[in-house]
Image (tube, rainbow, N blue to C red; front, side, top):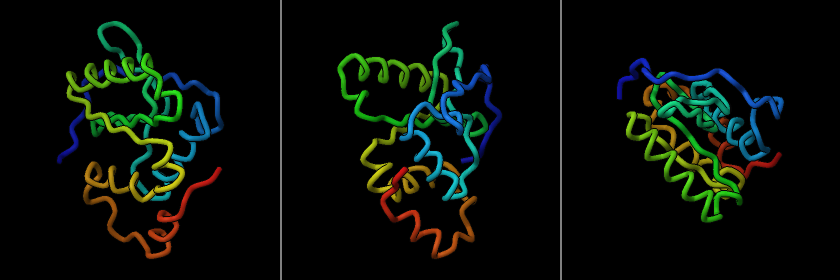
Length: 142
C-alpha cells in the first residue's frame, strides 16, 4: 500500500514519562522490537484530535495512517475494553488503521509483532541479516 500524507491533526505532546517517551516498560519493549526490525520510527504517546477531543495513542505513524496500541493487563477490564473499542472505531472512521499487540506477544513472541507490522511497511525490510532475525525470535526482557 502506498503511503499518503495524513490529514489528521496531531498534537505533538509526549507524556514524557519514560526515557523513550513511553508510558510503560511494555511500550518501551514494543518500541525496541520496532527499532530492531528497522521499521520507521513512530510518534510515541501522541494525542490525536477526534471530534474536538484529544485522544492518546501508543504508537502512531501519520505517514502510514497507522496506530499500534500496546495492551497490557489493564486492558482486560470491561471499561478499558469499551474505551479501546470506541477509540478503534473513531480512528478507523478517519481512515487510520489500528493494530493491537498484547503483552504476551511483546514479551514472549516478538516475531509475531514483526509479522503483524511487516505488511504495513512492505519494501522497507530488505537486507535484514540472519542475526537480526534470530534476535527478534527470542523472548524480550526489560
